Image 1 (cartoon, rainbow, N blue to C red):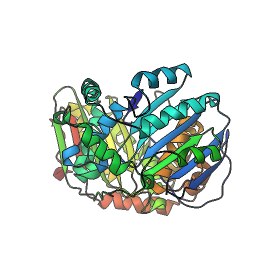
Image 2: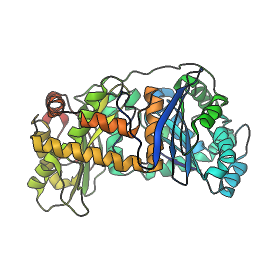
Image 3: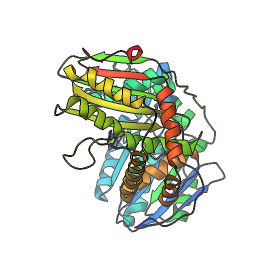
Length: 445
């Protein structure tokens, strides 16, 4: 059983999640049109038939870490670690042995909004695999002696968090404080303190049909609807946690060393509030620069070039990001540089971020790179399942990749410059990890 906070690369995540609009549809290479159905119990089912040799089915719950409160912080991390433990219908040994016998893979991933349980298996073994996917996603029992064994896994996860990921995690805390500000990792003081009763209450409150989606790639849609209809999930909408952007705040973790990892952002846009503007922010992200576009190439984009002009041949890592959620977002950049150079690199990056305008060539390049990166992303069956799942779970409706590409093509230069002006005037939040000797405070930016 594998678990992960995120499988997408930090600097190159396309993050096309939950975009719901209408456009003409064309089949993606290797897959047919996307189908979606809302069942009578409000559970959303989406599928794409594919010619790939692996079938993928995910059960997703709108139950990410934004739904935690102060008393149960870290619950979603524990749920990731506990996936595959004894359920109402199967023991840990039975789950592991049977999935291995059919050559399958059963994993769980989560972020701030969604927990996804995913089965990957050849089509001829789907029946067997789906039984254990149902057990793992909906039949948890959380035996205390088994939960105790997850403590080591949690501590290992915390010890392995890279500086860049820690900076992004702290940035959300600074920008939102609670809800979306909740970490996707369990705080150290909570390890061993989240009881089976706490986990059962969290599952009962958030694993409901109105907050659930079942998606598949390489499986018949009617078969998937029948499977989803029979899942033992209670009905209900659950509680919605709003997460207003605060801005003008910072979080710093001084750990010394040679490097500084700094994330700076202002408010972005959500998929459900203004999907067209959310896409414009993605175009702006690629125009700003997402790191080298070719192997051993230079950092591209207006911000990447500005930092290169400041640091010259000195080593650094950079990427603009657009973290888009259902109701809001964060737009900014993350930078890793040697401690002595971090201050001037940040100054150059923020000055460019605050410029508020781009040339037509910058926008055209960003749009082309975003469009192509998205198509490369969904060409992989695993990524397509991730994209469909996020759309279904967050927006309760699904677009095909071709429809999303049509909406990307409809983004104009004026749309991108409009969001660039919002970024220029927005309040910044800052998070920094490492040697912070030269890293400025947010009120100095």
